[in-house]
Length: 338
View 1: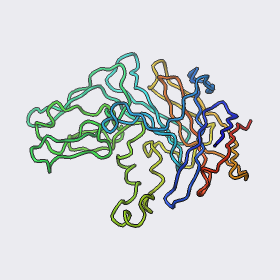
View 2: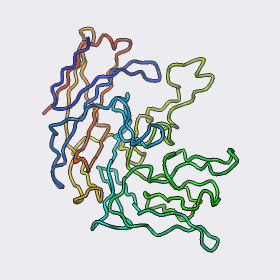
View 3: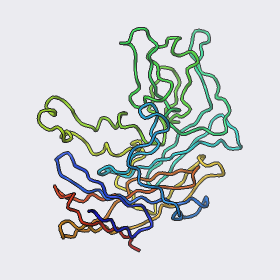
View 4: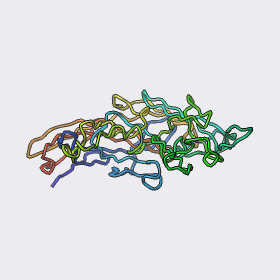
């Protein structure tokens, strides 16, 4: 029976996995929870460590809502996912428009947040109302550009925004049945703002994107008749491990983050902006398989920032080759290197 010797202050798990070539791996996952005690201070190890997520968690019904947390048990990640889960807060308590920014090491992203707006027709043209004042706005993809249009009586003229099926503002045509009072996105890219109902900008957000959304699903490979006959149940040869990265592409750091990176979060915390540095931690992983020991060093591949929860979740991961030997792993020891 596999024995896990956890010599750290964090959660540790070991999970089996198989790559597209059929090679077996044990994925060792270390998950740390850190408290945001002050606005300009280093993170502190939390007394309450969040468990390793073994399945995705959604804001609502799976498949009909955006993903809140991705599973922590994927085989690998090609870069470090950076995700912000929270809300935009208007300065002074109320506002119509505000920019939320996330800066983590080399990554820098800004989303413009608008109060509620809808389309209306005036003088034969489709226009949108002025933004309504708001105090806070959820930073979720339901508030970003996307959605589906099934208003046309002919099903062949229905459409879906595959980059964000749960969003709002997507329209196939200028039909009144679709556009009248249709909410515009609350979240937009300030470099590519919506001017017309015909505009189809990239959805703007800071969260994990769904497994079946573009661009993630483009990495899943080809599941055709040849795959069915020659490779099933293995992954297709054109499967790209970049699929395991769940953050939006502009919030994936390549190469991986290593710690000490500066972080600044603007307008996503109720009582002021956040500035801190990621902790720089090192771990030693030892694995014994049939009496043979190997050592491994994990990489930091997931950073989840939750200002409303006053915490940051970090995940480190290491792939341990164990071809046909996962059930022969005797023990795994994980310790923090000072």
